[in-house]
Image 1: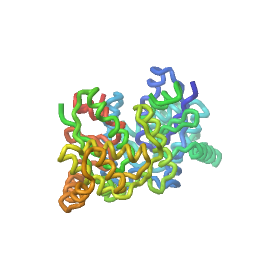
Image 2 (image 1 turned 90 degrees about the horizontal axis):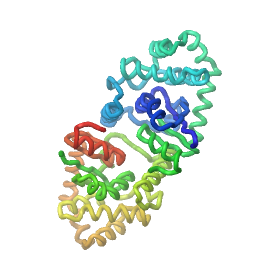
Image 3 (image 1 turned 60 degrees about the horizontal axis):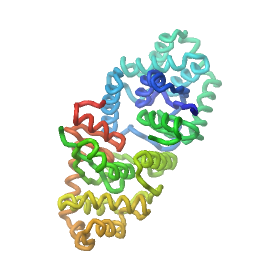
Image 4 (image 1 turned 135 degrees about the vertical axis):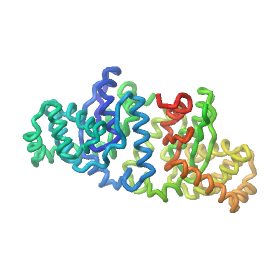
Length: 199
Length: 199
């Protein structure tokens, strides 16, 4: 079965659903998914894709829809969470650094809990530090490394790869070059990986 | 079980999937759905919600996603269909007139086939006339009635109702005041109607 890549950005609201349910989902479906943080804000700015800013009706719907689907997946959430987040780059640079060191997924899950359950904005240094602490990482040195030009370049390279793949939003799933956008397309991506079409 | 209202606009691409699969779906699920055409373009302009214009990457994805899901539902389509359509108001005024006279659903289905299978732009008088003909309506008098101030006011009233309900896009399903946006939320709407939450 081809791999499924899970492209997400800390800062994306619907990514919350995937981040919270993906481990159990992988176990249930005997699937392996690679977590790939990128900078969705850079992609969307470039493509003039502004999903919620200045759109109160659509924004209210987004929170309601996330609430309904979180309930469906038995995920706890206190909504609306603070949105948009401030420093999207830093949080995702930390996450990407963590992916190369084995703690990126745990950090992402901890940070989303802090953001969506405890109401602390996920781009803040407070939230990032707390999430690092919760996955047994020393916040100060990690933050220093995540702020280096090397860490910035690494996130930019991943973001460029996402753009080349045709990604325009988060979360997205990519299977053998095929892009599926949205938490609600996770099953479609699995189907594509297994049989090459959506069932 | 509360009723499900299906709010759609001729001109909406994703509405194609619902329009083509809804009859069989209602039969399978013993559900009754009321078809309610409205002017989604007026709603989206007011809310500065521009989903695809000037967004080539997202537009390409949209067609690919519709193609994959059409295949899933065994719906034939020749994509991309001409988009956007020209005269959204007229087509929906005709559809709304037809709803009050019993041929609105058949007209909508015929017009979407002409648009998505035969590649004739759904806002054109040619396509509208052909769809009327295929559902046993005399095109010229119907078009004349659909162009009256009364028909215009009727579509505007439905559109105002949609706005009051919190609708911001098409297709949308409304069950007891709860809005579900997108063909992929049809099952959620049914679940809401049956048990009051999404399962």
